[in-house]
Image (cartoon, rainbow, N blue to C red; front, top):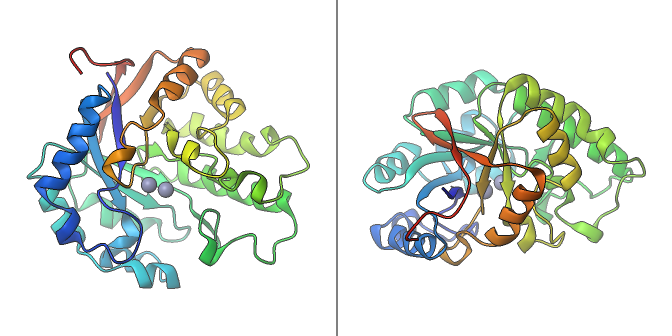
Length: 279
Ligand SMILES: [Zn+2]
Ligand SMILES: [Zn+2]
């Protein structure tokens, strides 16, 4: 089986009203692209910060600007489709209880946990760039993976999204002096202890770094730690569904990963990875 669980039904631009994108026609476009790629199991996981309810978790100016929609309307719409219901929820340190309330009150099939921000700065957003005024790449990488470890350990999420997103800019930002495995260590330890699934995401292939998330060394450490994996494209338009999956399948194969996770009602099962017959 092939899955694509980390999907956004609309682009990140603010001017993308839900009534234009949360439609049966748009879902059909995602389905059609998925079928071409042999992907049967699909789910959407919109950013939590697009919903007004997220302002209970954090009042970062970027969230204030983005939080326009109603989370329950999104959930309701999704239940009229054939897609699994997910959400991409940022880890916000200190807001774990409020995050639990937001998630537990709704019938998600799975929750994708993300770290996009460390303190007030974003690792993947130029408007709030964590690298502005930060001279020490080792400090950024250390803080990033420590936060990923906290996200894994908080127990709120089923999947850890794009686990080494901090590399997104590739050569566009400084690299740490130390071997990155030193920074991966606490995150992988938290993954092992929590049992959270690790996302293999082809989104990085579309970004300046031009690589799958996570890096091979990070993935090797996860395999050694006995982690389970998911497979996703983080598509923001239908054309990106299943993007780069040939590369991802090679990547999984080289790692010796033969099974990936499927989700329903926040229960996970392992399924053999591979193209579905007739796809
Ligand atoms: Zn993300
Ligand atoms: Zn995403």
